[in-house]
Length: 78
Image (cartoon, rainbow, N blue to C red; front, top):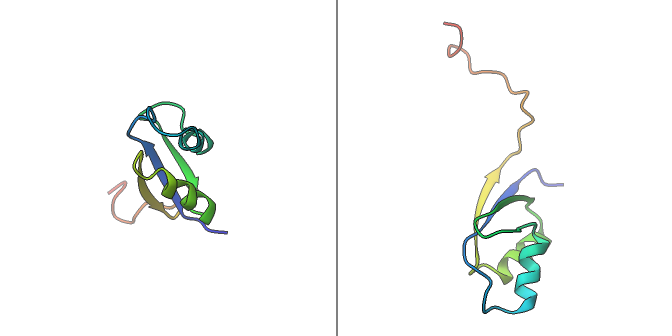
């Protein structure tokens, strides 16, 4: 399984576009204009994005961290 994620932001209204495109926006987890969600970078999600690429902005987040990463040496407490 991939550790990469995509941040998808809804930037343009679905008014005037087909019901299928509006349903795709909802299926991605976007509820309001300007909302952003993080989804796994899979072929299914990429296909959904390609169908509504004119309505969303996509950023690759990269590796998902767990929060247990150590602080860089020489930065804290010196």
